[in-house]
Amino acid sequence: MSEYDKFAAAWDQTRERPWPEFQYFSHLLKKGDRVLDLGCGNGRLRNFLPRDLIRDGDYFGFDLSEEPLRIAREKHPRDNFFKGNFGEPQPFGADNFDWIISIAAFHHLLDRKSQQQFLKEVYRTLKPGGKVFITTWVLPKKYFWMNFWQGRVFSRNWIIPFGKEKHIRTYRYVNEKDLTKLLQKAGFRVEKAERFENRNFVALAKKLK
Image (tube, rainbow, N blue to C red):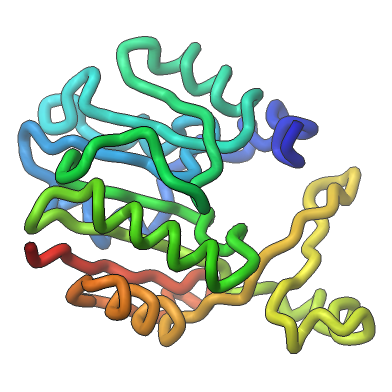
């Protein structure tokens, strides 16, 4: 069981509105695009992808946690959901997707090797000319000293509690410069990488061939 299985219902209730970062790519979607959502959770992204563009069956969700996936399958029975670790090889063919989107998931990869494997698979499964959009958290400053005294700040892996029950979650600090370097090393052309509203780091990149 993953940590998200423990509080999937509570998490689902707080994940009903679109992200402000949606504006980075929503206007670029085209009719017939196939979308892979890495770290899809409860399938929240699907709610905001127009079905006249992203048709039933052209949305694919991939996540490690079974309970959020169960919720996603109930909400979107005509789409496709898979369970797996996105830091490992994925069960999709090469040159398969027009878009790969990963909202607030990349920072769960806690070492460089897993990050590189993730992007290697993203590059492999994207079609030539396909795009990837990634967001990571600007980690809350209020948890700085807790992580500092535990020796976590310099390792870049922070513990951030979630919800009233203070469920423990670990995140890796990955900023826009880190995303740019990792994406370029994986073969992508980075079109945008920046801090968004002091809440998230965002990156948009393209597979050239």
